[in-house]
Amino acid sequence: MVKRYAGIAFRCSRRIYCFEIGALHLKVGDDVVVETDRGVNMGTLVIPPEQTSLPPGMAPDSVKKVLRKARDEDFVKRQENAELEKEALRICREKISRYKLSMKLVQAEYMHDGNRVIFYFTAENRVDFRELVKDLAHTLHVRVEMRQIGIRDAAGMIGGVGICGRELCCSTFLTSFEPVTVKMAKEQNLALNPMKISGICGRLMCCLGYEYENYRNSEGGRRRPRRKNRGSSEGGSENRPGRAPTKTSARETPDPAGKAVEEKKGAENPAGENARKPGSGSRRGASSSSSSSGRRSRGGRGGKQREKKKKESTS
Image (tube, rainbow, N blue to C red; front, side, top):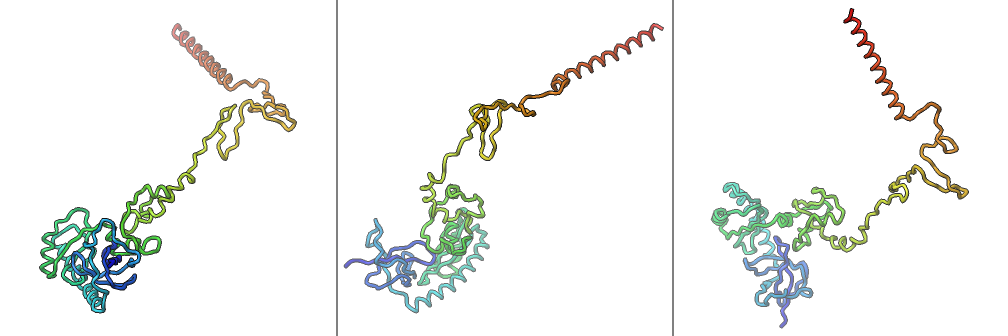
């Protein structure tokens, strides 16, 4: 007999696990009771048997089985476990503050048979919670397991709405987290504002990697070589975009009749000649003459004063 498999997902996990369903007739969305390594638990079928095959490298004997389709008493038991989880969270938070542990409790999960409770928490460093586990086991009378998760896993468990207005990807369809870097945002010409490219978890948004490969493939069409400024061959001036070409001191431009007319810089009369007023010298010559005349005038006054002093001394 050919074995049939199906993909099962659990409430506090994004991963999809392969289970053997045997002769059960199940469809997507059915709640089932399965046997796991931690005990009996309740999950949801997300991949039908027609689309599920045994993962490569996995032995058929190691695959867990689906016990049965969920019944009414199973849904009642799940509701009771939900109430127990709220009480367990309250007790665990009180004991964490009592032991002064640097950890943030995220969620508690009771197994379907009620023999084990798993606490999920986040922490920056490793936490010694041995005394906490002993105290919780003595108070709750069940087996206690502490599991440290990442900040993205915590956001997926809590859920929420992103800046796009839709439910978070990590809490809906993502089964694993791919690495996201700032290079992806740069490649897509996004503003490198942490408030705009970060999710509610504080990390870079997972959706930055959805179209990254398309942007990389179209990089050659988007980026073109920058045009260099070309200077004038005669005068050496740069003709930049948006600016009128500059005139050189002596340049020949074609007139309407096809003749070359020489343009000289600073021409004022219609003939194009620099007409200067008689008696007007260059600015340099005027400054030199004025300085020399000033020196002569200062020297003359100094001589008269010296002659006056000599006469006074002789008298």
